Amino acid sequence: MNILILPGDYIGPEILAEAVKVLEAFKAQGETIAWTLGHLGGAAVDAEGHPYPPSTQQAARVADAILLGAVGGPKYDTLPRELRPERGLLGIRKDLNLFANLRPARVFEELADSSSLKKEFIAGLDVLIIRELTGDIYFGQPRGRRVNAEGHDEGFDTMHYSRPEVERIARVAFEAARKRSQRVCSVDKENVLDTSRFWREVMIGVHQDYPDVELTHMYVDNAAMQLVKRPKQFDVMVTGNIFGDILSDEASMLAGSIGMLPSASLDANNKGMYEPIHGSAPDIAGQNKANPLATILSVAMMFKYSFDRTDLSDRIEAAVKKVLQQGHRTGDIAMPGEKVIGTREMGDAVLAALK
Ligand code: NAD
Image (cartoon, rainbow, N blue to C red; front, side):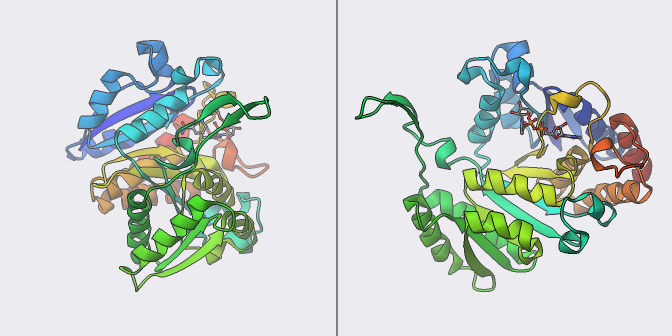
């Protein structure tokens, strides 16, 4: 199990250090795990002059899986666009063809009170949002600035999806649903966008191969509303890049804190990049305040999806559940009056629970 670790910027190295403790524990127990460190994002610009430098490209291509902290932050906000940390993130996703982003939004019973929704609406919530990650308006060409026919400056982007792009993400969704409660909701904006009309048509076509799975469709504006109104109606939601970006952040809030939510980005062979869904949290960086649990749960996803080691992922998830039951809380998941511990202490608590 060869892992490339890319800590990234601001809290990235802090949360990754706690995830490495878990790897070290498994290694000490005889698992054949090896890892190397590399640069991505702002840290890569600082060290090697590019957000996705050739050394990282090479290491990423040979690794079996990649663990990422988070990239970006104010230090890099004024860089030219091609050097911005996000270009590194988009670059590695595209380079490795990581087209399927899996974001489970699950509510740990112990944290149901920290959601902004009433407990009865979210207790037991378990939604899997599958977002297409390498196409759509984020990558569409042409894009840029121009002067329009009326002589005004304008900015523009292009939304498009090809049949193979939609077909492969549809299959990921139907396959995932087969391992859950056999329901897929495809989210689009078919009433307005030609791209969405095509998306829906292809979804319906691929669905022919999965008669055992129920397929429904929902407009993205309604999906945004339903996620806060009746979130437990959903099992697997599948959608394009831009809609998925927004909906998965919304779903994350149902679960209490973005500090709890892992994600996986997979290629066609389940090679994957695993990362917490949150960003680099510059406001709390260097203060031992960040919640490392989303990153540790990303390690669990890595063992499950890339290494087919559900025994190890189950152990990590059980350890996280145990520390929550024991009442350990970082600031983001603590209720008023609850004792708050730091990033390192939370990592140590998980380690103790693992052992
Ligand atoms: P953010 O997710 O970094 O932070 C939003 C809020 O959540 C902040 O108040 C932060 O303190 C808190 N938070 C985030 N992670 C936390 C954790 N583990 N524990 C406790 N609290 C946590 O989003 P932002 O502030 O909009 O973005 C900051 C930077 O991160 C930007 O440069 C942005 O581009 C970048 N970003 C990177 C990624 C990524 O690397 N995948 C994703 C989103 C944003």
